[in-house]
Length: 83
Image (cartoon, one colour):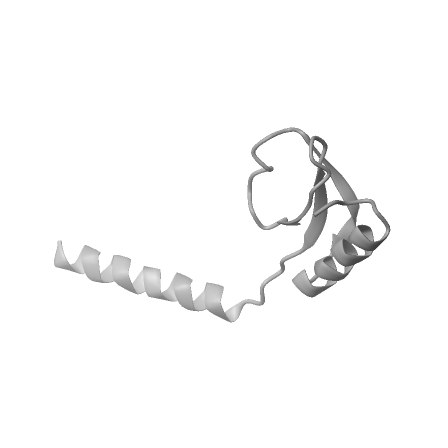
C-alpha cells in the first residue's frame, strides 16, 4: 500500500512539473451581452460557455489579454459596447 502511495505521489509531481514547464496557450475574445450591451473579455481556455445564452461574440480571437483590452477599448470608443 505504501508503494502505491509513493508511486501516485511521484506521478503527480511529474505531471505538475510537465504542466508548469509547458507554455500557456491562452486566447481571448470579446462577448457582448444582448440585454445590456456590456462587453466582456472571455478566456477561451475556460472549458464552458458563458452561463446565459444572451450574448454574441464580438471581433476576432486574440492571443493575449492585453490585446483583448485594446479591442474592448476600441469597441467602447466606437459605441459598439456600453459600460
